[in-house]
Image (tube, rainbow over all chains, first blue to last red):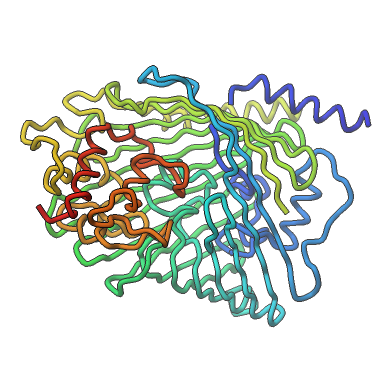
Length: 365
Length: 150
């Protein structure tokens, strides 16, 4: 029991010492950078996010938590594996530019189930990531995965609905690099993806409807791709995307990377977004992101992130900055608790200049 | 000793990172609260598409809902907004239309800008100040009057 109280007590104290914004947090990219592993090592979706592989489940149960109670296999048998995510978030405003009455809420932010069926071992996998709530059911990802690394150059072919390959797959969709590029957990698209992962290389390219989750109207398509070199201590990569629509086109290009120094992990991304229109002026945006993590003890991570947004490079003095400070604790396997504080720095006359706090409980399997 | 070495290396790597993290928020000179240049040509707010377009959709909503990558395929650019809204099924609540002409209560656009409890995702405009009561009233009025191209 003393073994249990020690690390949990330390985690609680450290969390309370830190003022910490609400965000969904789970297998964030920093874990991939910290371990030097590719996203495909731990996730069924080889570009990251969603259901975990057997390796990912073992890692999450044995390497992440402070204390481990036994071990549970996610594979029901050789054919079928299951997974789940459940999140409860308490959040509120800590400072509001409008001096409004402080608001707070407790809400269920995610109920999801993942199902992986290995129809032909090492060659054909069916995968579904189904959101059950909080407001109605919807399919986040559903695809068939051919090859699963057994094709030449560790290749695979994916067809269905999935997250497009671009940049760092942060779970926090509100971060500028995810919200503004439009590559986030809210915008899976339907299409086909090809990937190869020989040696340190991960290369993915997708062809999709380009409708950001809406129904297809057969007018224009999107191509998105990402390439990264991944080593034990560092990684560097680049992403690009073109999305054609009848009266407009979006091009995005960016670079990302990360490295480890002892218990410290750093990662970042820069993106340039260019929207061109037939009947109005073009708009270009610039977004950036830097994250630093410190592994205090096993199961306790302290995090600081910085986001920058220039929403229109032709307009001066309109930039926004977003800071986030937080800590996350994995007291036992399947449980993650995080506490965060987010500062949004906007132009002085904006009424969005609001700071928020958040405490989240994430139970996953 | 190893911990000390880690801190030194971390400090050394933080310096170039810090050089990047120098950009701050803009001072907002000559801009409105949404970060757009102040314009004397904006028409008075009223329950017409043109007024809503000039006062709400273009300056506020198209900060995200624009062009080829408009979230959920909903582009609110001038010339596209009515086609993408009126009698278009909501992606988030398939039983509702984004704009149901004559019926603001059954229009998911109204639900989203009012931030009702049953919406999926966040209140619109996301990460920006909520629309004013006058702006929401103009949208409701336009829908009530048939959501015409006026």
